[in-house]
Length: 169
Ligand SMILES: *[C@@H]1O[C@H](CO)[C@@H](O)[C@H](O)[C@H]1NC(C)=O
Ligand SMILES: *[C@@H]1O[C@H](CO)[C@@H](O)[C@H](O)[C@H]1NC(C)=O
Ligand SMILES: *[C@@H]1O[C@H](CO)[C@@H](O)[C@H](O)[C@H]1NC(C)=O
Ligand SMILES: *[C@@H]1O[C@H](CO)[C@@H](O)[C@H](O)[C@H]1NC(C)=O
Ligand SMILES: *[C@@H]1O[C@H](CO)[C@@H](O)[C@H](O)[C@H]1NC(C)=O
Ligand SMILES: *[C@@H]1O[C@H](CO)[C@@H](O)[C@H](O)[C@H]1NC(C)=O
Ligand SMILES: *[C@@H]1O[C@H](CO)[C@@H](O)[C@H](O)[C@H]1NC(C)=O
Ligand SMILES: *[C@@H]1O[C@H](CO)[C@@H](O)[C@H](O)[C@H]1NC(C)=O
Image (cartoon, rainbow, N blue to C red; front, side, top):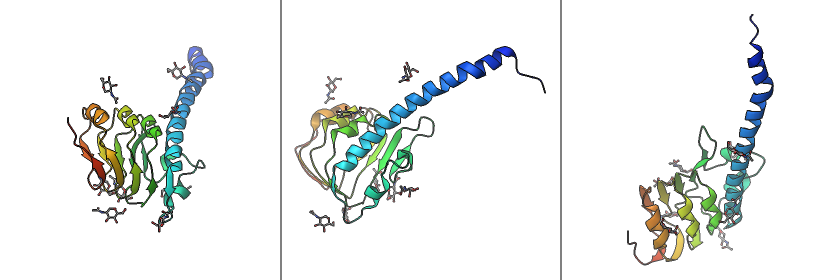
């Protein structure tokens, strides 16, 4: 078999590991951001005694891409979908949710989340589907960020909560 040219060997020896580690480091950092966002989300769940599946499953022992309800992109391995519908979870939505910058699909219908929706949701520029229906959210509808989000948003479900006010788009 023919040996690879010296220049190729040089690339293989020095450049490739450098490029790989550089990229891997970046991916790891980004995944850590997604992980800390999801852990913050988990820490704001105050009651899961009806169904403790999520608390038991969302542990740092495995990659977030294996966590129940979490879908990662096949190429960049960032969180693109979060579907934790009908898990009977009680709690609030922390601002850290706005750090899941690759999120396209967010579905938390059929839980008991309450409180306000954080303004940081407006940071989710790639979001297409948002289903917060059938929870216990209350207060004023956050018109400002909803207005900003509607550019990309294709589906928005807020029914069966206790919001006040109307949306002016
Ligand atoms: C991440 O990648 C970018 C561009 O590829 C580079 O400029 C940056 O220094 C990298 N960051 C780390 C922490 O490796
Ligand atoms: C927690 O949830 C369970 C099951 O849904 C419920 O029976 C219980 O009353 C809740 N506890 C509190 C403190 O709200
Ligand atoms: C979490 O659930 C997924 C999907 O059911 C499973 O593949 C994974 O092993 C579970 N992880 C833990 C730590 O239970
Ligand atoms: C969301 O999760 C529920 C319950 O785990 C499942 O039945 C449903 O198919 C999922 N929907 C999507 C779009 O992944
Ligand atoms: C995520 O968002 C929170 C609140 O919006 C912020 O304080 C925090 O610095 C962010 N964390 C990371 C790792 O970007
Ligand atoms: C959210 O999840 C529920 C249950 O899995 C499903 O019935 C509903 O269609 C989903 N909502 C959207 C907008 O995909
Ligand atoms: C709302 O979610 C609860 C579970 O939290 C479920 O029992 C109930 O059937 C849902 N209601 C509707 C109208 O989907
Ligand atoms: C909405 O968009 C405008 C213009 O891009 C910006 O100035 C404003 O800060 C945004 N508001 C929120 C809540 O993101």
